[in-house]
Image (cartoon, rainbow, N blue to C red):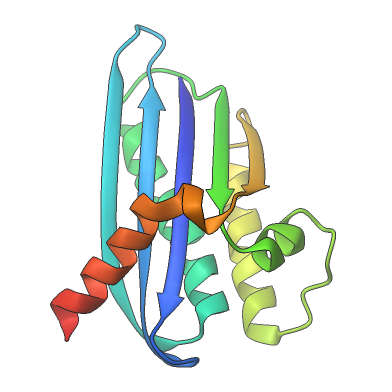
Length: 144
């Protein structure tokens, strides 16, 4: 099973009301496909915290998928439109902010649950992350 995950987080104001958006595309070994999408409001926070929270929400959903399926996940590719977040997760930039560092530690814990899978985090331009962005904005629009 191969999985592509597109995540986005956003805040209206910084900090401000914030939401996450997640798109998960699954290719099963038996040639079936599944497309999962969701967005949810996460309270008042910063854009960067929302970006991290979106990744964590994706891992939670992936855990549900694993529990409902016997197939092994060979690859999980995250596509994120925040160069800062991707650089921090990939270890290229230090994570100096305490709150972001705690969220990064939580992501590392989630990664451990998928240690049999090849995990990657890749920066993509916002233009290629519009579906996840739509989920963020739809969640915020529903809230307000």
